[in-house]
Amino acid sequence: MHKATKLVIITERAILEGVAALIEAGGATGHTHVEAGGRGSRGKRSTVRPGISGVLGNVKIEAIVDSHAKAEAILNSVSERYFEHYSGIAYVEEVEILRPHKFEV
Amino acid sequence: MDILADVLTTMLSQLQKPTLAFLIGGMAIAAMGSKLEVPEPVYKFIVMLLLLKVGIGAGISVREANLAELAVPAIGAALVGITIVLLGRATLARLKGVSQIDGIATAGLFGAVSASTLAAGMAVLDDEGIAYEGFIGALYPFMDLAALMTAIVLARMAAERKAAAAVQAGGTATLQEAPAPSGLDTQMLKSILIDTLRSPAVSALILGLALGLLGRPDSVYQSFYEPLFRGLLSVLMLVMGIEAWQRLGELRRVAHAYVGYGLVAPLIHGALGFGVGLIAHQLTGFSAGGTVLLAVMAASSSDISGPPTLRAALPEANPSSYIGTSTGLGTPIAILSIPMWVALADIFIGL
Image (cartoon, rainbow over all chains, first blue to last red; front, side, top):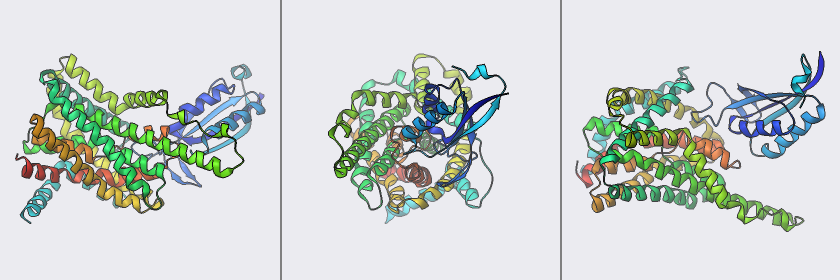
């Protein structure tokens, strides 16, 4: 197995496309997103009831990059652009991956 | 007093009709904590079918209509959308505890149009056998676009003034850091316009219009869209009722002013639409049913397509305030007031 860094961003569905663009711009080769729900400092957010407009819905976005620095730079750019006005949780995890060539730019 | 009694009697009997009864039923079971829910793909599909139906119906009748007849109500609809936002900025956005941007965003949703409320208005008129112009659905985008764009432009201007004031208060900031007033260039207006036109609701309606106008979808309209309309609408009313109850909770976190606005504004906006309908009635012989639908459109507030547009264009605005006010209060009040406009049309124009 090979060492790599996974970045995780849990945020509003409304900005999914914008966050995905920043992730790709930061040097990730792709990303995965899933609908997310739970409870946080701003109150409860549920996948079952994201509001009929979808604006109150959340997503969890993950991407794997080949260096910790890259992951950190991406999270900083997302935070700078969005987290003043949109809710968001972001963190990185060290992971072990099977095929490193998939994550090299 | 007679008029009031008349209005109340009509409203009571209307509450038992399917459209309003399903809405109240939805609110009631949600209030009791029921786990009943309609999945997202289902109601999105229903909204699409309803808007296609409204669009196709309008398209088919525009084929035969005189374009000048459409112009007066269309201009009226756009003016109503803009006036509602200006009214909101002068009232709600100045009230205690309401940030100017949140207030303008809320007014934008109230100026925009709800497909479900418009469809409910059509169903009530159909039930009563009251005729209205077939092209009425074509007015939807005029009011919707006018309101959302006015709100976004005004709110962006307010946000920039606020940012500029903050920079000045900071004292140390240089001029370069102040956002340029040219932030509101035509480029931004164009992108908002394109975004709104591409939103699922407006797209479905315009597609329907084009199909009705250019194609000959009459057979599928008669055999599929028209008969399904009522049944689908009843499910959507249930969704709106459940949703209204749940979104009321959002209002616990915002100022009381929003509650007052959500309760009163739909009636004032409806009266505004009704007035424009009356003027069109004088000018071009716009029908009583059309006047009712113009009032219903003006009273309604956008729940499905408006909020994502606002969330993207106005990040600073708090979605709890505008979604809570619109979906929690504005929409049920607008739907429940439909019979009132019918009663008023009977009094002022005669049905």
